[in-house]
Length: 75
Figure 1 (cartoon, one colour):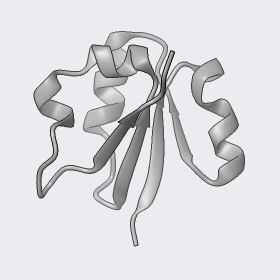
Figure 2: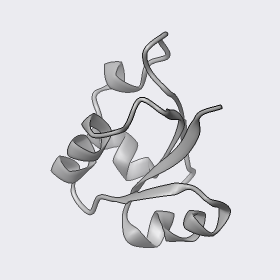
Figure 3: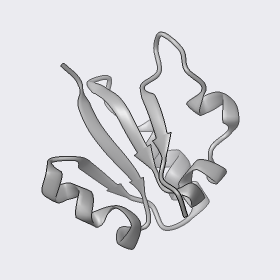
Figure 4: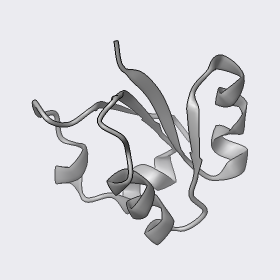
């Protein structure tokens, strides 16, 4: 079974750590892209803040056999 990660601003994702989610704080678009590229292969699901999702290329989050599932939190 894979793990769950969240990418976004501290205020957007910090609470998810209480549920065991690996929180990757990214306060700007470049940090979001670095966090996305650094995701370990064990991550099966990525939760993105709306702002983090906007920072990523749509192709990066598209479903595929080598990519984790993604979900975008509402604003």
